[in-house]
Image (cartoon, rainbow, N blue to C red):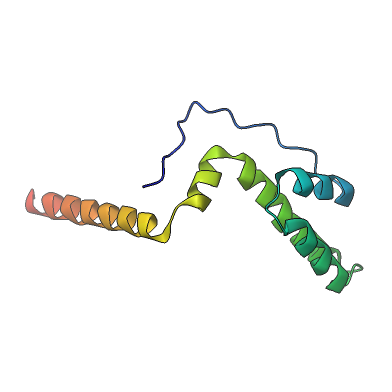
Length: 106
């Protein structure tokens, strides 16, 4: 099972990402390998006059940087499918047990 970060871990201050230049710098430093190239490919194929599309693309990559900087978010992304499935099974079992107990107490 993946270790979960404690609540006391400080979340680093995110880098400025108000411009494409800032976002590119943040991706170079904090992005996953290939993120910067993917951003450039998406921008190359996008209609740059469509500000909604550009905002959607840049927002997606900005969230990637923020997720990478958040210890809880990074740990969640790094968890295996098996680990997530086991946690969901435990939660569902607890919910079913709680519902059965509450229903029987009436």
